[in-house]
Length: 105
Image (cartoon, rainbow, N blue to C red; front, side, top):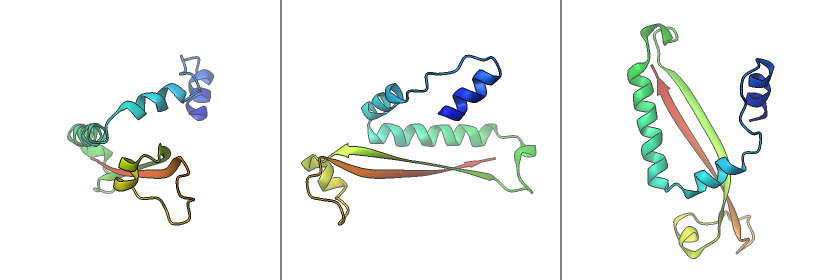
């Protein structure tokens, strides 16, 4: 986020607030299925709109995005996403991570 703010500011363009808190709170309100559907829709649309000269040596480019997040240790979450064996039981917030691969072109 800091790189985007610096890049836009240097070019005299409006930059978003560096605090990612609003983004994180908004993302937390989205259901897992909605995030999956949104990701798939964006990836498919990007692939359909990609121009042939975007290909790298005739191959599709891959974009990999990942992030980590914390989620509350509710019984429902623990059932669906068990704690890592190295984590203390009922730590209140479990660490989790997400990785997504997009094919463009």
